[in-house]
Image (cartoon, rainbow, N blue to C red):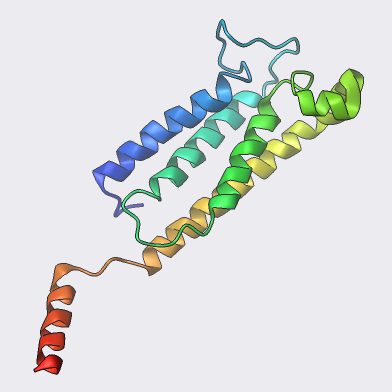
Length: 158
């Protein structure tokens, strides 16, 4: 990340904000008049939101001006979705309520949310690490290298 351009850092910052709002507003971890939740926000939801936003923004920045193939998209997407489910209201999640009922959501799903938060952060961290390692291995050649290749081609064609 030490070699990142200003564009990548700006993307990371904007990405962090976007992920934070995309996850924090609908889950009502960030209070707002549109969304609400009948169950109080847990203490660990705040650091989970911050870490998920940070990792999500940094991961997004690895896709800016990047020549390497996007091989870790699934881990990043899965990490973001797990983060959303981890900090969301357990009885507001329609899928959980349909599968487990309201009492099941509180008794079974709510206790697993911290595990989901850890899994989310782990997936995002692994995806970020792999993207950064791939970027270090697949550096774009400088213009001097391109010129020497053109000269070699011209020599071969002659």
